[in-house]
Image (cartoon, rainbow, N blue to C red; front, side, top):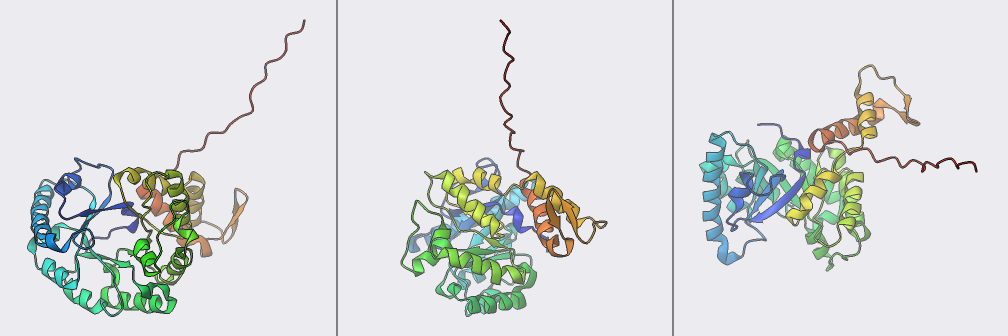
Length: 315
């Protein structure tokens, strides 16, 4: 199984399997900056359209096989089935090997065995979505993390936090003037980052569905990154570049990270008025270097010098 970095996901765009332009996106003719795509057969497809969506997916997979034969690269591609029964059906399609894996909707401890049995192809990565009422329990999430490791091991690329579904569990909808962190998700996201992040799982951030307030998206992105989240769902193509830009690292963080992972680094040392300790900062440094690998470095902010005052001419 090829190793894929969760930082490669960047902004993940969901597209209904009924869309006619999916292959154009995968081929790079549309949205060339996109790094990960989910072809959705679940919430984004009406029950009456499922058969058509499956036929459309077959056509996309055949097109992806042609692109692969031409050695053309594109975004990471995942499929989100409606349930484990549909996943088992797709797992048996020979052409499903063209995608990178499945997004698992509404995963719970009780449904995990069904999914593990359904997706038997070891080369398919999985991104379970945390979006049910069990997610509010730290104990349930700790148990789920242990069970995921035992059942699927390294096939879990990342865990996706389904913010809107979790808000729905509470009968709430995001306030368009605030970030998710000013809602009950301000408890859930840090809890998941602690409970599941400490078990070694990468987590991605919920969607930001407001298109008119990019400055608020920027604020939420910074909070996502501060909690160690590695990517974010995009609701619209216009958000892709902003999300990728938000995941850039500062040159100062990258320089500090490189010093920390240097084998010759002292046990504790001072750098730019901060004390660095490789024994405790190593994991952070590795993540910073990996983020920089996929998203690059922020340009240095312009230094605004004091205006130059011309000498007065003596009279």
